[in-house]
Image (tube, rainbow, N blue to C red):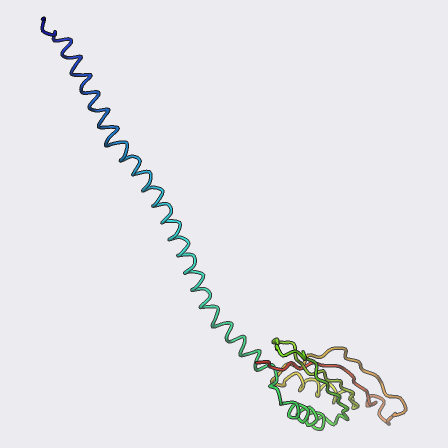
Length: 189
């Protein structure tokens, strides 16, 4: 038998090396590439989760900052409303205001609110109907002081009428009737 030639030996070695390299590629490199792809997907997923958590933490921080502002706004709202049971105090205060400005005041008060057991904030209020008689300046001063009260008096439908039959010597000092409706909200807890 003839010994294989160098050329055949070289070709055989090359084929053996190629087969070994192919097996190494299939056995080692391909799983490593597959593992790298899986790691890439996992890293992307973790990155998305981290970004989501970061955004949530930013929203939480913003909410915590806004919570202080909301608390101050709620405190302002509580100051702008009356407490349940303070009706007599409010009526007395409005009557004293009328006396202070020499205004003849007729005041009708009615309560408007839900009769259900579930109380909703901002649904209960007192409806006030004013019918005031005085001189124009006194009405203006009365309304000015009404505006300065520590709670909101929401005025609507202001109507001024010149009173007939009450003519005084001074034409500018004719009594005027001021009528309007107002709301004062009650704090519900």
